Image 1 (cartoon, rainbow, N blue to C red):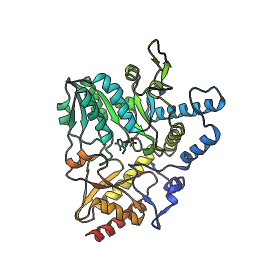
Image 2: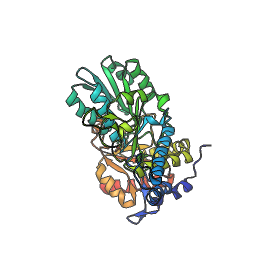
Image 3: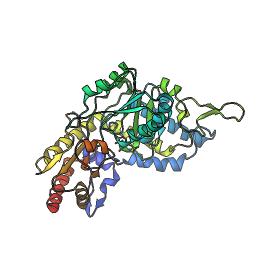
Length: 408
Ligand code: PMP
């Protein structure tokens, strides 16, 4: 019953009509950025034709309409992750900015020498480097939850690492490099038993899994619009209201103040505005809301079921290729097939398969420590979205065979 009318889905994505090197585009780089449906593209035209103006401060009709559209997107994102209140949703430029916001605001105010932050070996650089930058300044210690050879987190090691010095666990929901789905609900409950908070990087989960921040027990949750059929330049940070209210502002400027004075201390706006200094990416945020409406219309459960079929099909098809090794074989995976091939460099595969119109990712996927742990310095990664088809997977696998023969 979880059917997806893929032809209809595809018809909503104009970019899928284009050709690359004279071949129909087969876009399998969705974990990096996924494509946008017509309704999201139309948002920009509507917005700039009808209501372009600055939000939250104007009293004129355009400012009112733009503010309503922006705040409506906040409510849409709230619903998508089941946050209790829309003021718990802060708009950012994306996941990276959301993670840096937590580090620079919560982290700077709460972490000091003697404290420990647990991250995992599966993290994207954007959930590693902000903590390293802050640790250099504040003197706390970063500890790493190890992964096994399948790319699965070692939960026994996690339990052992948790102690009374642990202040924060920062972990991704789904690994971008391997596709591993992490048991974040269980991790949250263990973190809380030790008095620590949990920050979940949901960049790769948001397009594939139903997210309920309350059920997961997330203290913070980050996502990017461009991974959920939306535009670049927008994302969101969920934070529990009590935490956000206690946290100091991060960036200062317009929009985030209550009153500014040279004589008495400047006071700050209530959340979420306290964390939204300056003019935000208004059209992008409105389009982010439209993208989520699109996902809701298709149905995340239908998308997820379709993608797992694609992943199974691709996994079994590439398994017949001699010398190909899948990197990341966790039993719970979403949307990603990462692999290396004996006698063929990942970069060369990526470049040559582009000649077949096939877009895949090659490299370290901003997860160098993870790839080092898996014993490789680069992989090829095919990643799937609602509009991909089994036929496209076949074009990709045929292309891969050709390319490997050329390189060997
Ligand atoms: N975390 C993960 C798991 C990701 O996949 C990405 C994007 N590749 C990011 C964080 C960073 O997201 P953005 O570049 O949109 O800020």
